Image 1 (cartoon, rainbow, N blue to C red):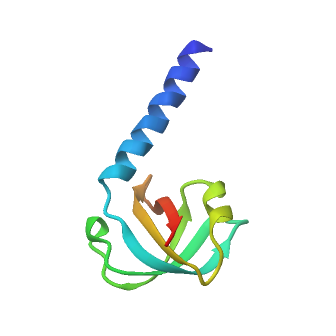
Image 2 (cartoon, rainbow, N blue to C red):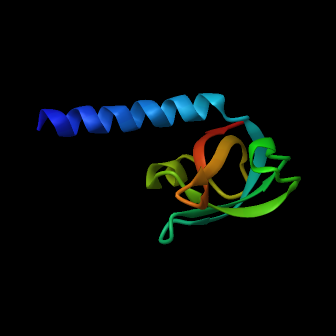
Length: 94
């Protein structure tokens, strides 16, 4: 049990460290698909993904993220490739 707790703690710490080094990007939520755990965001450039301004579908890093925001809201978020998928790592309302 102790090994599992240590493993989970290391994952959480790694995710937090990753989110802190990623650029924070402004965007607007245009669609939320909770069933598929996906969010569509009209966003500014995302330098770490070499992506310009556009509207893009991202996988949510967790289903709880999708509960924090609504369609039409201005947000700030970080995104990265996680297991080959474009993923929102963190999200907050602006």
